[in-house]
Every structure is written in structure tokens, then in C-alpha cells.
Image (cartoon, rainbow, N blue to C red):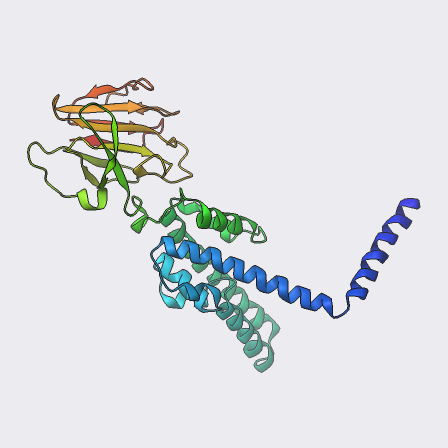
Length: 315
């Protein structure tokens, strides 16, 4: 009984506090709502800048914000009609309720139409995020977090990480980080941080002398090729800070810094150094020793991780 009186006392205190605030309560609610909206806009703007967008103002205004988000993922503008939480989507939903509820006065028909509209919105929202997340290194299935009922918590956490983490970078087409660079190995074997190589410039380039090329066979980089004729070091991994061939953050078979590969011009072969948890393997299934540089013949295929779904040919 005492506990019941205690709870009732707390409730009465809260009611009294709310009553005492009077007009200040709705004002505070409006301020908090606007502040939250603008903070969210700032984070979306940070993500948009990583994608190379320059119209910062769009992230702070209704409708313009959703158009801005469509630009980030390369989706058509009309997606905003189906984008859940968007002002346009809410207005269309309200219009359907008015049209079928008030004009036709049919509750079953109204429920059916609105239900179909909500399902369509879920599908298009899922498809949007399935294109959006891979552009920043996340698994496409991360899109499910945006349509399951998490009260927006999961999406907000991911937005914070994408906006403020330097390791999360935009990658055109979901491929390597745009402008990714790799350090050159000097003749003495030391890393020269003053010289950088950009893969977006190196692809398809022929270097004087013997051409050496790493080609993706299976997995995320299947069909991609990287010219390493000048002995540049290639680092495979999930960390954009430590690697220049970067994999999805949720591809746990790949370590943050999985392995390094460079072409040894003098020996005419490759030097592969594994630094992973799940291992780096050769054609016949042999696992390379961790932390030890190993010379691998040209034409060999290396497999990253126990699943071996990501492989590269050292040509």
C-alpha cells in the first residue's frame, strides 16, 4: 500500500510540474523538435559532403532534405513519394485517407488502399537504403534496420557513425573508396608516405617494363584490376584508415587489415603478408603464415578468409 501511495505521489508531482510549466511546455516541445531536426540535417549534410554534394542548405529544409538524400544514393527524385517519414509521403497518405474515407465512405476500401500504399512505401524505402548503405561500405542487408520497428534508433546510430567517422568514406558504385591512395615501398623496404598512388587513376594504366596486375576473381571486387607494376603496396581490409582495397564493415570474414601484397620486380613475383584472423590462402588451400612475408608466383590466386568468397589473381 505504501508503494502505491509512493507511485501516486510521483505521478501527482509530474502532473503538477507539467501544469506549472503552462505555456512553456509546448514552447519547449517545439524547440526540442526543431533542434533535433536541425541536428539531423547537419549529420545528413556531413554524409552528403562525403558523397561530393555541395548544396548544404537542402539538408535543413523539408522535402529538399529528401531530394538531397536521393542524390546521395543516386535515386530518382520521385522516390520521395514512397520514402517513409518524408513529408511528401505523409501528405499522400493523408490524401488517400481523405479521398477514400470521406468521398467514397468505404472503410474496407480505405484500409486496403492505405495498407497497399504503406507496403509500397516499405519496399521503396528498403530499396533506397539497399543502394545507400553499400556506398559507405556497409552490407546491403543493413537496409532491413530502416524498415523494422526500432523507433528510428538503429538508423540514427548508423547516421552518426557515417557522418562523423573518418573511416567511413563514400565509394562510387560501392567499390573502392573514391580517391583511395596507397603508399609506395621504397627499394629499402620502408614505406614512403610522401608518394601516393590513386587506384582510380591506375586502372588500365601500362607502366614501362613488365606489367603486374592484381585482378579480382570472385567476391566484392570481381572484375576489377589494379596495376602494381611499380611495386606499390596493396592493403586489403575493412578499415579505410589502414587499407586501400576496402571491404564492407559487416564482412567479418575479412579483418580490419587482412593482408598486404606487393610486386617484387627484381624477383618477378609477389610478396604476400597475412595479418588477419581468418587467414589468407593459396590456390591449393595452403594457408599463409601470419605476419611472415611469403613470395608467391605470378598467376597464383589468393583467397581472403575461411569462406574464400573474395579472391584475387596475382598476374
